[in-house]
Image: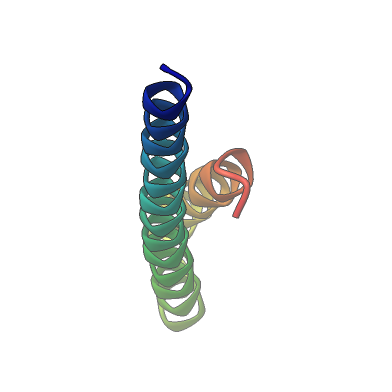
Length: 72
């Protein structure tokens, strides 16, 4: 009985560790994608004076907010 409980607890611990690792990878991928998109918008903002400036600034603020909310 004790052995079965120990095996079950081990399986649960391994499952939780795998889930945590998967979420960390997902979060890192999301953070990398957000950082890349922020970089792209910043470059567009630097290269496109006038016209779309306000639109790009709003997009940049939104991306930076999402970046912060995701804990990146």
